[in-house]
Image 1 (cartoon, helix red, strand yellow):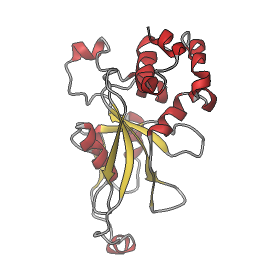
Image 2: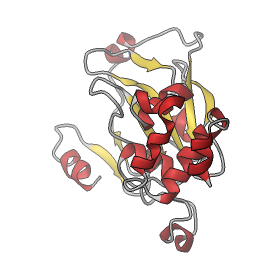
Image 3: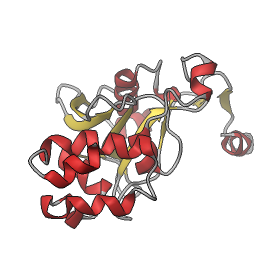
Length: 218
């Protein structure tokens, strides 16, 4: 964030820099011709399916539907689901999956946590699932979504995210098959106990009839 603030001070147009809300804002309104060029039908409703990833290991990943209509900012919609004040309190991860993927994890921005520092330091709010997928520590609930603006278009790009998408990110496709669930043993040396526990919580109901899974979860 400090790099972004430093770059903002060198822009040709002045911007307001908020240290409290970690955001940038124009000091002058957009020209009328710019606003006219992006006029849309605000009566049209647009929804997208996303996944909530609780930081509680005992809770399973939960499908949600977000209202991302033209009269709302999609980051504000995500912020509301996370319990954050607004979009400035939300951070997003790198793209997850293929290089062409626009799927990202949205979580509370650093230094915006509302929890007490002692529990934060001991990892009580660490989101094992989100940390595993993003490759960095994520605290609190997270939202897995495919939504955003692409460099080649001014239209909002979005795709539904399902639990199937989540399982595909966890392991290669062959490991998601019941036939290969026993291969999870190979990953025990690479995946920490909280992460492995969270993963088994999610996929457990799918494979309860397999003795190999019962062995892993015991």
